[in-house]
Amino acid sequence: MMNIGEAGGTAPVKVEERLFQNRYMVDAGRPHIRIRPHETPSKALLAMTRLCPAGCYSVNDRGQVEAVVDGCVECGTCRVVTAQTGELEWNYPRGGFGVLFKFG
Amino acid sequence: MIEERFDAIVVGAGPSGNAAAYTMAKAGLKVLQLERGEYPGSKNVQGAILYADALEKIIPDFREDAPLERHVIEQRLWTMDNGSHVGMHYRSDDFNEERPNRYTIIRAQFDRWFSGRVREAGAVLLCETTVTELLRDTAGRVIGVRTDRGGGTAFADIVILGEGVNGLVGQRAGLRPELKPDTVALAVKEMHFLPRETIEARFNLKGNEGVVIEAMGTITDGMTGTGFIYTNQESISIGIGCIVSDFTESNRTPYGLLEAFKRHPSVQPLLEGSECKEYVAHLIPEGGYNAMPQLYGDGWIVVGDAGQFVNAVHREGSNLAMTTGRIAAETVVWLKRRREAMSKANLAEYQRRLAETFVMKDMKKYRKIPDFLHHNKHFFNLYPKLLSAAAQTWFRVDGVDKRTKEKQIFQSFRAGRKLTGLIGDAFKLARSWR
Image (cartoon, rainbow over all chains, first blue to last red; front, side):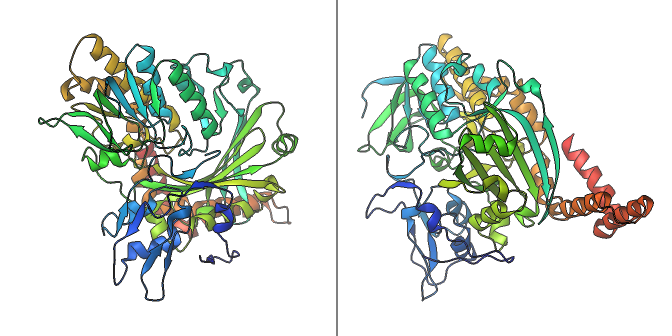
């Protein structure tokens, strides 16, 4: 995944170090969020590469947005942001799968 | 899935769903509650503050065994710029009372406890079960739900939707509109563990006393949002949240914002040496009264975050969730006893009852605030800086006379926002607040 530098002079912050603390029950081979095939991502989808609190989104070398949702915390931000463009197929994980908050 | 018919199905086992399921089960109704997480609380996120009053009205003796962290004796409001904060603190020994008013809690533990009480009251709880859609009869009335447990269905006279802010069931059924990026906030939070003596020494506490810090200012980098720090027994909850549409237009990441908040010189010493054990994120409905959807219809009622029941100004949500859950349930019980249908016309009683409570009164009172803050970003950026500079001018002793200092402060405000802007802001804020 990516190492995201911050504007405003603060040091780079890695999200994966944070997610490492969390517990997940990954539904292997059945991602609950899928990106519809696209040539060029919308501004909204592109924003998710920065906005996703779990860093699930990244841009590949063809300029398309890809998602690896194993670390998803199921907040729904990407669903709300892309509701207008319809680029995501978003469902909750099957019952019992996904993130398991120890404290919440 | 379950062949028998229920009086009510509750979707979700958070504060609103639990309040509803408990109240109906206690009154003798046959209740089925469905939760997608492995256990109640495993998908739920909150700061978290528990407001005793709302829970007391449901479970008066909750203090006997509920997992409570600390009772809040001190509230700090911080206006922050990059290197300082101006604070308003209120601490009172009156809050060390027999039945304290507010507690910090850890939601995964609290929701599990609440759910235990719900099951004791007689409700049937099925976890690891995601509701996929509402079932309707030919007249369009909601009559049950379909789940992802082998596509199993369950039927009831009423479905109470306590499915949370990002609740897809009601939305996909067309009961309420899609969330808009400018009416929801994205909040991220970490749990930092420290020995309890360290927390008590750093926050000036003894026993189970707790402190709440709510912060605003340059920590959100010009976005509409706030930060918070809550003391638990052996941990500190720290988080920050901003309106989603502001995030989309900024160049900041949510975790980068949280990291900068943690490194702020006013915050860093409070967390020094702590161990972070969890990182979470969640949406908060912040659109207020004007963003509220239709709350009931033929065979359904919506409660809690799914109904946008959050008072963003006072950072209250769980108490509104519990109260709407309770009142929805009481309405259902009342109709049931009168042998009346769970029709849209009859369920209007829910809204009538809510209108008499603090829930609707507060939602209405602050109906203009979300829009006001969205269009007046200087409350998050400019004013905190001006306030901090003014405090520094005032407190620094440097041979400049006090009258000159007063002039400097006044001029800095005029330079920053012009006199008409200052007066206009005060007027607009007062009008929105009323």
